[in-house]
Length: 312
Ligand code: ADP
Image 1: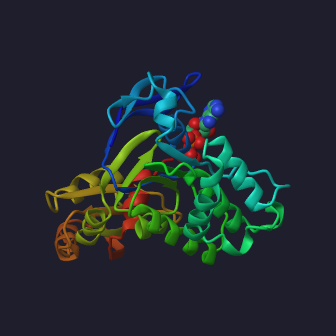
Image 2: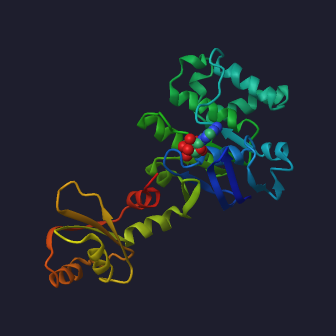
Image 3: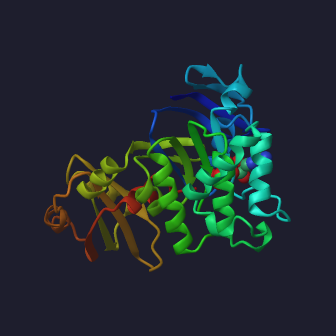
């Protein structure tokens, strides 16, 4: 459905999106996850044809967005982070206005508005002024706007940003409902958001993809790994790193900041759930190091996210 090839965007000399490649299948709900400043909005704006890439291309149903921006835009609905609404209009009048801009003919407007009001839960607020609505309701009106021409692809930039937990749950439900028929790409910096709604999660950091997998596989990956926190007194950090790395072939050892003088902390990550504490203890027993802490924590999707996006 969508093929993103080497997508790159520079703002002057700053590279905000750095050679992203993606293939998005019809009917997928894809979560673009990353910390603030990772390049999510820039990527979505290029996907919707609002920004021209510095390099690369996006093919939608085989059509290049560079050559046929308007044709591709017709296939998409876009909800930016803050829905661009006319606040002094009634919801009904505003959506009628959007319908006319979208070339929906007079006799079809009411039936389309009815469908959208059911889909987005607007029935009780159709005759309220937009400026009286809560942020969650405004977001739902924005969603109806983005869906007006029944696009095959829906692109949502942080659709739940600034909403309370009930409003978040409502928007999630709507996304899931819409996702049964449409391809949806939405950005978020909230992991639980992506986990709850998406079939597939793409994590970006500093403009690059650092993970791209089905939500279930990422969860399995998290469940199969473990992290050990180790703190030692009076060791030479680089010698200790070498020795600890020799405990097992499939581990990664990194030194962490430690606030206590004379104490050096390490994080030992394993891609298996095997408990390595005994092996680590036996290795340390061969030295004169003193253990202050040796603790195993099971890995979560959150720890994978932090690991992949640290340093941002
Ligand atoms: P995200 O949506 O993940 O928070 P953005 O795509 O908004 O990230 O921004 C990515 C990076 O590009 C950030 O460092 C941001 O400061 C920078 N950036 C975004 N828009 C502009 C712009 N118009 N001019 C210059 N730098 C920008």
